Length: 460
Image (cartoon, rainbow, N blue to C red; front, side):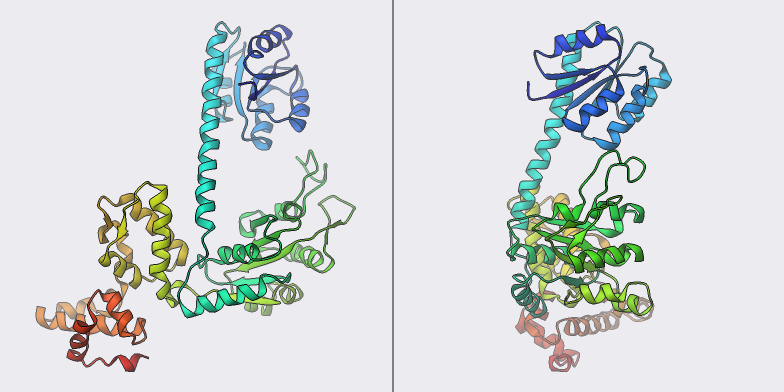
């Protein structure tokens, strides 16, 4: 237990010494008498738990808690106070205090029980992250898959450009796998032994983006109590992937252009240039050319980024990849949810093949995870899939009002003709793919097509 570190903060010397003497046998304890001293200690040491009084000279315990929550959110907090009020207790709990203990502390053994409970909880969180990290590495170590011709061409391009050190632009709709392609480029490059750092520019407030990317010096702005490195320095000698690059401001784009051209950055509030050795890969789901033409993205930066462009097509335009991705994600989630024998039934796979996938690969992954969780049998069945996936072709290409005006035989014939026509369009007249999609044997599919005067060659 000695490797678990506890910081005690109390201006009352007797209480401080009592807690330090009692807890030091079990934990690595540091004791200080003010919030200011606590913050100085936290700058140089890492702790599992902070035990703090509420009422102290200078900064009080609540103010200390606010700073800890902001700067060191992984630290659990126990509050002790001899001037407890309901309001104080509520405020402490709002700030995330694990426990609120009244002074004088009459049962020190109970305090150790509470501490051990918190430490065990922290261990479980760390262990969960560790196991998830192992799982993610197992999954991400698999090559990106895709049997479609367009994806095979993209993989060939990746093989060519990965060894180069040039800046790259990846375009495509949300969810098509731009970050996966970026990682694949990194893992096949000479920089693969170093860090691959991913930054979603759209998720960081504009006012903080520069600080996050370039770092900042102490005192550069309010709350900048120490100098920090940015993502560029974190990715030194590795690769930096900036997603949603078109969400950045014009002023940031100027600084990014300087970093690319001069291979130097300057921290916010800094006066010195810092050399960087980073391969930059950027991505967007927007039409960046149109943004440039409309003056919403810097033209000079665009040309620096667009040395090599990879455009990833949406999943609906590479239907051949749906089953391969679905099975890959199934393998991932069978392991995660301990369902090793689970498969995808043919009817369920047919639904997956015919869905629109507006959210692309990301949506497919989420659907498979949901289906694995809900599946109660040895195979994923249609009712395990979201209803909005059910063949849109039938709904879109069959006018329900018109069908309702026909008798059953006529409605069935119209539906079948529209259905098979849509399948041929999606499969581009490929009978083998049409048979797989419909679940109908090739020899049984031909008579159906002939019945409705549908010639596969008309769709090629």
